[in-house]
Length: 379
Image 1 (cartoon, rainbow, N blue to C red):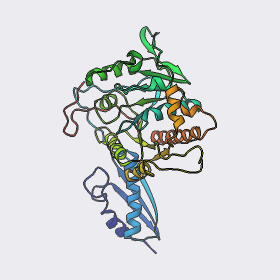
Image 2: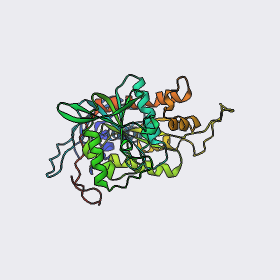
Image 3: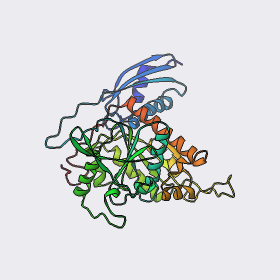
Image 4: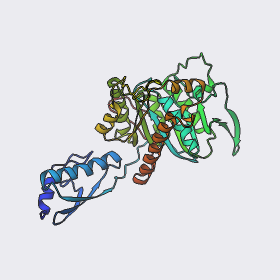
């Protein structure tokens, strides 16, 4: 069959580019359409640099041409991103990168109790085993648990002179550098701080610390979507975010909000993917059985619905909890299914980071003046 260019353009008029009001032809996003028999080449330029927008645009073009023009058409989509320059907003302090840190990964969850800190700790030690230089900032101000998971709860950071300035030296164990508010409070002491105090403490741990050279700095965020999250994203250019969820609907609803927070136009932090924790339970006496206590493939299905990568699933295993309690992350247990599971997930995270860095410009710390009806955030 010989395809007609006008038929292709008419079909593409039914597609709206993500973030734009007009269809992709009238908006000028479609730069050229070339047909050769049953082959068609579509050149398109979009302004949204996110991986989700690029993927959705390409899929929409393929599906529309196949559905409306010719089901067996051979389609090539040449997609280019040309993000418009945004004017600087006055009177807003712009965040800055930390010298020597290549990638900053936020590990988040919409809901508490889904194992976010456990996943963070095991991602960190697995990255370290792979030969990367890794740090973890425990940003869960009100419930810091990273010091316990790394068996350093009784340690205290010391001061070190760096270029004539006094800096905190992070505590190190299992090849991972760690800083947490838990190092500066007593185990039975509740942290009762308003948002600005918590943000100031985090900024001190970020910028007054001697992290040295790191390939990855993992941020263990508090549950939910709130003041701490905004403060961190204002302070740091975050490379990407990983969202942790369990399979049940209550957790998935909150995880969806977590993904939406990072994807807001004013924030625009790439979501590297979703990890499903407590995916199934396998009794030791029945190693071939899987019991989906909280539901099956909930987070996996959510990742497909939101068009973000699914990074992998972790079982509900007693030894993960025991390993965290004694301060030796389960991923350090060589030759176990848990080590294999964390290896797979960590490799997927690294792959998404590499792809993100290849496809997108470096992230800037966000500059927020207003946000979806909330009060202005100023520094």
